[in-house]
Amino acid sequence: MSFNQTVVKIFFGYGILIFPLFLLLGPLVSEFFLILLISYAFYFILSEKRTYFFLNKYSLFFLAFYLSTLVSTLVNFYNFDYAKSGIFYFRIFLFSIAVWFTLSKYELLNKKMLNFYIIFLSIIIFDSLVQFFTGKNLLGYEIIKSRISSFFGDELILGGFLLRILPIFLVCLIMNNKIGEKKIYILYPILTSLICVNIYLTGERASFFLLILLFSIIFFSNKYLRKFTIFVVIFFVFFSFILPKFQSSENLNPATRMFTKSYEQIIGKGEERYEEYKKKFFNKIYVFSHDHQGHYMLAYRIFIDSPILGTGPKGFRYLCRNKIYILKNNDGCSTHPHNTFVQILTSNGVIGFTLLIISFLYILIEIFKSRKKIDHQNKFDKFLISENIILCGIFINLWPLIPSGNFFNNWLSMMYFYPVGFYLYFKFRNEKKIS
Image 1 (cartoon, rainbow, N blue to C red):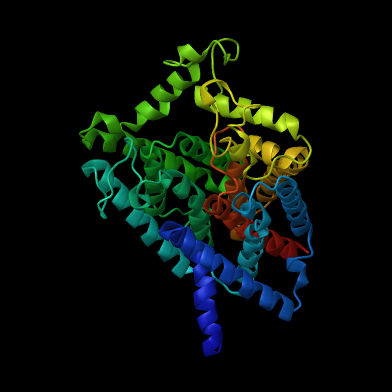
Image 2: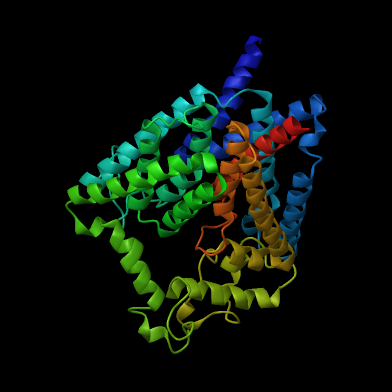
């Protein structure tokens, strides 16, 4: 390999592997790398005439979704600032293609990648625990709203971040033979359980629920990882019980936020004054909370006026205070409806929503197919098992029955589509191996 090829591999290849670090450093760093990576992949795909990276059913599907986003954006052109997220959204899927291409070009899932994740995650775990016990992390960021955030500062997204890179870390363990058919190095279930404990300590209820869902699906669909999952659960229960005992402030008790506060929000405790105009379901519960139900009610009102094409990626934000939609006391208005499926229904209309439903069902069916393949395997196939884990990671990102962030947010979109590149890599490699 020439010097120039080595530099390219180091920059782009290992850049993909440490991409979670770029996300931690901020949106400008990750966006800059994304654009460079897409340009690099485009150049080599075209020069090497490897057009199958573009000419496949996955690219056609995402092209259809992008067109639904673009048409909705242009039809509902409020101003360029509101429209740019929809117009330039194509780059997010191209990012997945670029990840897939680079993983295929170089052998990247090696010990160096595993070591990076071990060090990277260990630093975040240590920093989070320092913040949990002392009130400040290593950089001096204080606890906000009784929730730890580590290096993210005033952005309370640590739990979601750890949740979405966890499947990639598990793939690293498998590809480097740290999890096998009969052997498990005890260090790795402990480290994985500490990641789970950190998600729990953040108090991010949606992330914690999705974490439970992730390991439930892995346990169901992957017979080779059931022992590993059991070890993780045992260590998680131990650490989540012991660590809060050494925390002096009761305000940081994650169980209170996870369970007590969730229950109170669902039954509407303290929100009785709103019940005259916002009815509970069966007169007993709200959808997640009074505020979330307000988002969904308002989104439905907006959707009814633009059911086919939707109102554009930022249409909800733009229209939610319009007097023809507004709820009492400006209730429900926000930057987005706080649920991916509700947001796509409002922004992209029935067309985009149908494509989202199709993608969700496709991933679900692929998980069942993956389980069947693994069950019929007589040996530990790390590529097939890795594909299964990535499928589970994508599935929880698409899970509909949970509050979620803004789907069109650049940072979150990168987190969603980063594992898609890994999935395409494993999918095509496994199919080629079988054929």
